[in-house]
Image 1: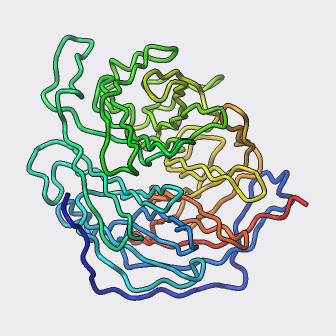
Image 2 (image 1 turned 120 degrees about the vertical axis):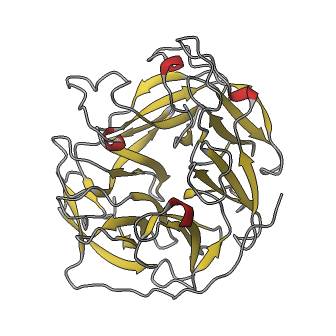
Image 3 (image 1 turned 60 degrees about the vertical axis):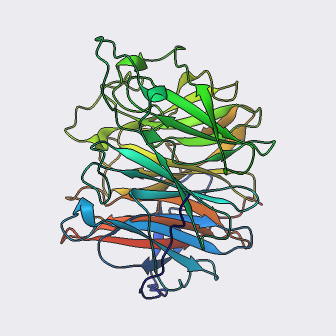
Length: 404
């Protein structure tokens, strides 16, 4: 392991709130209103992209993202970190991170051990391997120092394609988050193309990993032996009350069955992807397929259990497929926890957390997720695009009406 953090120059961000700032609610039902008060705080510099927020056990907030640069040169991207001790209203000096890869995403154990996943595209800084690999970073000192583990291709991730060809090195894709089970065991998914996938387990808070569990997807659903992407790529892991592990997986809509009563939209970009669920009842060895209930063009999932017991699903709408219409950006819906998972209502109380990307432009990232602080305030992070094609990050502080 190598120590991987340096401090860099930056400026703190403070609140920039207008008297009429609000969050729109489409088709309000249980929320009871079509708008919620919002406090928006810009963070960082132009072309910062896809922020992710986390809350430490003592209440301090962390925000991590990556800087794409003007013209988005992959070999110049870098990750950075901000801290807030007042619930996201103000943020301390920017810290540049000596991470490889893009789209850094937080997860955290109950004791406060932090993990960040990234993926390193072939043209990216430091990639001399010629294919996409990933990193898992770990910190047990409140994100002051980090140790990085490279996730490369190896023979355990080599698969036999259905046409009989054995790919030399398929790109690697891990789950976004590390998941803590009820007994404290940590689990994490790593895969390559055409069904090759492993489920890692750690009993020492992620210092070492058992990588021996091979994942089987022979249950109901499409034949993933024909699917070129990793079955764990960008998946968000969630632990159900009954102990099942749910993997909320972004998938290519053209490979999977259409949502009931619809035709699959044929888009030229990956922004037409959607989310499905894979479920494991045996710790990650065997997985079955389920529909989730969301829509085309919705991705980057995260789930939060609120203090009042409700569930909040934060996601990004990256393209417009009717009935979803612009603006694009970060969204949330409410749901309830069930013994075997959750049930979200995507038709009512659609919370429009970000609406700043102009309607004629593609999504500026969204990403999320959402955390809740001690007084019940919710803090969601996102990026958006402006008319000059610049990218910008901010957080929004907001509250849901009381259920009492």
